[in-house]
Image 1 (cartoon, helix red, strand yellow):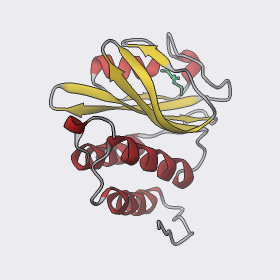
Image 2 (cartoon, rainbow, N blue to C red; image 1 turned 30 degrees about the vertical axis):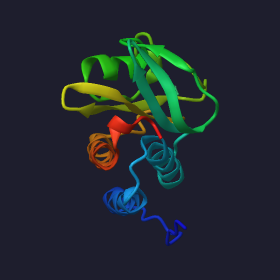
Image 3 (tube, helix red, strand yellow; image 1 turned 135 degrees about the vertical axis):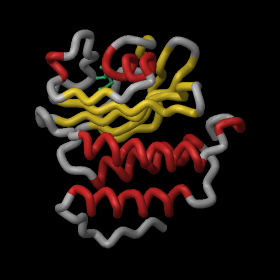
Image 4 (cartoon, rainbow, N blue to C red; image 1 turned 90 degrees about the vertical axis):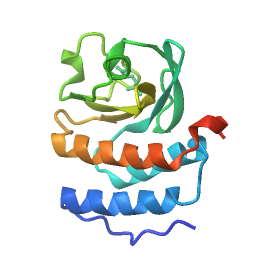
Length: 167
Ligand code: SME
């Protein structure tokens, strides 16, 4: 059973250090991408302040399909290159968006969302999907969030057996 101390550090660096440790423990010995993405989405949603959505979209051809997430039901299908997620996947670059309303083509799944951070999941040159975090607070995400979450995505990518299907 997953046990946390119940107290999340207020300091962002300390918080991410704890979340990385907790993620490593959750991933340990688990190869299923679906299980690992589900637990990572739950860990981030519970452990990071001011989020209204945390989850994954996965590449299927030229489309991103909704994967494991926490938050309100969301758009199922996003064309590659569209919206913040599609831009991150097509460009293979993280997208740190302080104000989603100023992002051309932003796709609104929840009108409460004000800022967004999307990290592409890269295995070599291949884009497997993206991690998407949404916040109701403008300017919620910083380069520190981007770096820490990129490191956590690397842990996820390493732990999973991507050849064996989603399960
Ligand atoms: N806002 C995203 C769509 C996904 S939802 O935020 C969960 C985008 O523009 O790609």
